[in-house]
Length: 472
Image (tube, rainbow, N blue to C red; front, top):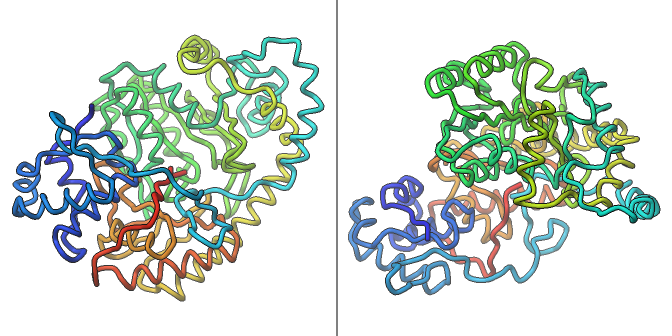
């Protein structure tokens, strides 16, 4: 059973005292940590006396907070194991952004493109040609790998099919790379903030994390990035150089070349997550792949461009790396579904048109969100995002976790800023998607405005259902 120390939990709880009655505020903040996944279900919490000493409060306060969490189902007392965090029950109703109930802004995604159903029907017609084969293919259909290789080549990175592996989405690809390239205890470089599930994948693979800051104003801290590589020689570095999630920043060409050269000298394998690389909203949309500037492993998927329900991604790497990944893959799965590969192959034939439509849709959504926030919440600093699907908004005060709790009471699920950071950072920030329809976005901003009005005024009531969400 995993555990969290009093010192680490206190770090994650930073700012909890600002939310009203002490024991209720403490319980609310621990509850949010469990809902956001920052304290995993099944994690043993520190003893009441230890946490009280670390927080500088009476043991009575911690005892009352733990009792509140037990009564609401977020804490379980186990003889010999102390207090264990848990999710109290399964979600009774899926959080559907188009439903009149809860909105889910924890997922940065778009509705499916119009051609998905037609591509699926065509794939079903094509499937009989493959039914005589085993169906277990750890590399991917040759015709799909050829299409993906051709697309990389057209974008400025000559690629052959044997440099491509088809995966079950980008998350699958990241996890596979992490456990193949690294050994447990190796150092891994990651941005801060970053995509939470990438951090989870690195930690699961046993990585010791070294973080480099990325901001909406200045982008990557290049000096810190260079120092981390020079001083620690990490085995792996996970970066989002194009339309970074959540800041939306894109790394300039000069920095790409310098960082790739430095990584090569120190034996660091850089992994570039390019799932949003072709969703630039300002200027040129023809982004040259990161590996065109030096050796790197690329991860792509259709989850952000086509639809999250099509679970297909890919890895582009040197042939020797692909061969290592193939050997490692069988411990986790035995191949990507054939039907979904055919579906994506059909969509790739008109992918440029799909991307043009997506970019137009996102530009409208970005402008709408900027306008709504300027009108309803003018005290927030809303950056003009260069690309991607989200805005990394500065609240001006370290109350993101408190706001996320209040938003749940207004019918909105949204991830607090620290969900994207290391060790509880980014309480001044919250990620807001602009990838939803006008109606959903308006309702979401209304909920945020209502939640903002309650922040700091009274304790947050418990939500009537388990609204835990996986951040995407």
